[in-house]
Length: 360
Image (cartoon, rainbow, N blue to C red):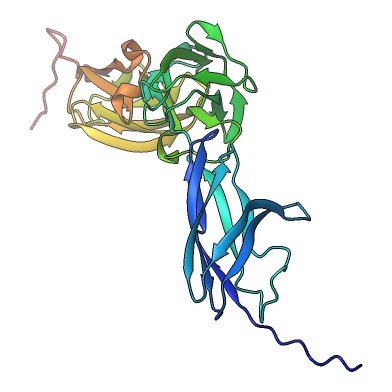
């Protein structure tokens, strides 16, 4: 005989949370609601389908749903170290004929609450001579808000000219390898050190802490800290007369002697501003310039005299700021300028008893 069209006589809907959050290892309960848009009572199931799986697993069976009713249903989810997605569906095997199925499910993301690690370095800024060994204090910890032990990678780097180089790190007196996870108890803080050597240029020491088995931290703002190393420089100055001695002729009314003043870098570090001040009979004069390691700059200082004598010219050269200087004793110097004025030639005198007369 003829079989006519089968009319769908029910529609079931599922509502529930889009996210379930807990600490790794916890079982968290979530409540869903099964809603009937049907004039008759039905009995149905709830199933779960985890991402990557192909078949639903029964999570709740034989759930009675009254006509036009709304029934709560509670399911538990195991929180893992990484987030994952589960599709929760009512009538997962379509044992109840429905007019549509696109509102039968809710996709739930099960997310772990991340640990909250932090790290600090001290001091944050130092000045040092090239080659000087420097040791910084490091403090790493897991905040007490996270209720269970967790591991993290604790690493240190010396950043030179933009390149990160692994730096030796200890925690509790024990060396820590960059790929060696360190376990922290809730609220535990570990003390350690990182040691580097100052370079010819300014560098940065960076410390980092990253939780393992999860890509998240509750607050990334304190998972990194850094210290700046400013390299000290060695600026020096020399002063010497342009001529020694200066000789002034007997008929001259004035002379302009001078000195050479050289500011120079004895080190080979990065460029720094230098301030050179020269003082003498013509008053103070200031010169500002930039010197790289090994470079020098020579200027002249002149003054005018009206006779013979000795005059002192002094000079100081300092990096800017001045506390970058590593060896202050040779940042100042002076020189004496000597001027000798010649005596006029003798004018002569008459010999006694010799004279001439003009006659009329």
